[in-house]
Image (cartoon, rainbow, N blue to C red; front, side, top):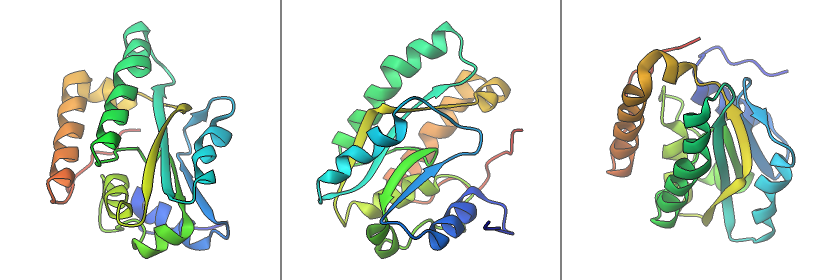
Length: 178
């Protein structure tokens, strides 16, 4: 078992990655629910040696009909489009990375409280391709959407993505929602 005292997602992921022995690192959150064949789908693109990372899509585990429609249609298109434009935006809740590329890129920036997954993927572009795998589905809680509302959630994450995409750092505060 591995422990991280800093208690941020970036530090926890980095500590886990440092202790891992495999050639591909897979990142998944403790409250995630992987759909059938998730891991096989997420790893399939690594058969191409040029691929350094993959990311799947997220659905909400406690979704209503609107959430399901959004997660099945709008969100995958958004992830595909950003990846196609060279700014992969997969979440650390559903991410796989070649260990060698991860280490060359310096891994996760443990000073960050959010956006560590975006920053890592931005650095990984120097080492190879990132592939979006829509069939690799993980369900996550929508507790943050329930607390912030759809608009507040969207504004925060779009602004955070823009900050990273335009060469800056992500937001410095990310409210814990349990």
